[in-house]
Amino acid sequence: MSAVILQFPTSTAARANGAGLAVAIAAKRMGYRPHQIARAAALARREVLDGHKSAARAVADMTRDLSYGARSHGDGAA
Image 1 (cartoon, one colour):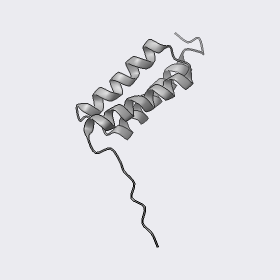
Image 2: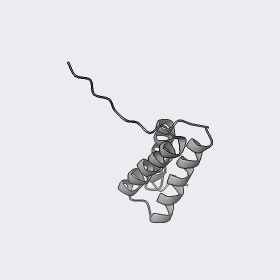
Image 3: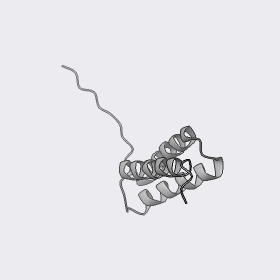
Image 4: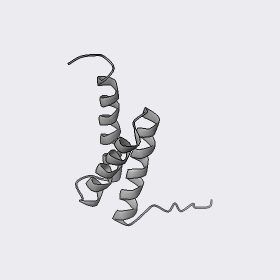
């Protein structure tokens, strides 16, 4: 049986950039404008760099917030 070794980013900067890219892709698919995409990606990147969240948690939280924001604008509620 052969073993497959997966390479994962080991530096915090690489993980932060990956989280930012994942958030940017998700926000673009949700239909957000470029300046909103850049801000969301930067916030996710910053949370990882500061050590507040893991990359996976930052992406999950930001996409949840973006999804919630996209839904709340369509119902006309104040």
